[in-house]
Image (cartoon, rainbow, N blue to C red):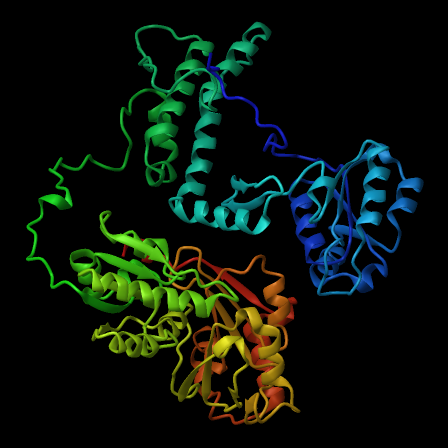
Length: 599
């Protein structure tokens, strides 16, 4: 007989949200992984000690920063020595983070050493997390995101893959209403008001009240049970009042819009708890109007069969699809052959009955996947289908459209090329970067970071009044930065003068999407900035030049070209832009500006 209750899966569980309250957490290692673990532990009010060979001198910048603020302690001491001389009863968790290669050193702890540390801690009753070794972990770290002061989202794959967990977390966070964090705060205030009493509860009432509170937290009670209205003519005991108010909290938590919860005032909260508000405040219910499915729309004449379109889908935001692209996708397409970078929000506009295939263009398979798509297009057209090759951005900007047009011609088909909004132009705009601006940037050059078959490309030399846009280069940022800044590199790798290391650069990831991220820094610090900002979010591009800080500096930026090339003045200007006086060497911004969610 099937069980009426879920069966435990075992292995691991998001069991608790920890408040460590000054309990000790020990971190072994000195890189960015140790820094992220330190932050998570500090967020739980733990006392954090970092053990690393070389101590403070070998720690990454974030650990040094937290040590300077006395948030953590960094010691040059082996774990076995520390455990032998410390009170292990105060140590709750040990995180071994130096089992992977760190950009801050070449040392990497062996599995044998990690296994010895694991046994050492287990004999003392200490829980262990060993980075990238799931079998040496008593607990794992979920991918987390804090939204406002009270809401946190955590996703774990139980050691199966931290990158996919981070991606799922971003997807979940991006799908949340923008007011979710504020709504949680207001519901918390509402719960406190619901439990407030004029007199302390009697001891025998305590268990009953906690059961009532559980109604709001997903316990056995259901928010669909009727909420008794308050009868002013009858006296209400404190216990009855608490029960009634908590049922109201459960109701509004379950059914009211996040925006309405987030906007609750103190007066409205009191009205809700008194039973005087039977529906959400601040709004009137809109008049009901009939809805129509798209199947009720008049259908146009069937399109001509046996055609091939090449479409540009823009940078990703569905509102940037051109009218022509939208018409082809929704009215004419029988088969859509999409590049893998086209986001799901764009693919969602394609009617359900249309066949969609995604190109398998992964590193090492790009050429084979490209040929596979072109062959599929010819095969579909030969069957009389209207085939759409859907590409991100504009098909003519590193979209290989010319190769496909020539291939299709060779097989007897003239394809129709429909342009799209190019990511090379749109992405900087989403990051508030004007590629051209008087007094800052007189021209822009668009190039790729990788040539045909994965080969290197010749990059343009430094020209002060010019912006450089590099597509498909973030994964090779080390080589690109070295090529641009190394004075000794010219000829086949860089055509012209070297770029100054203090020149501004921005990495724009997933431009126009809800989880867009922009990292602004200098050529000298951008690699560390990228490594310190968490997992990368493809697709990404780079913008290099003085235009990166133009809107941030305001009118002052318009004098950059007039002032001429003065390295000392340039460094001082960049320092003020980044906030170097406050110890900042890069700035990270997340998400789109307000307003795009309504477009």
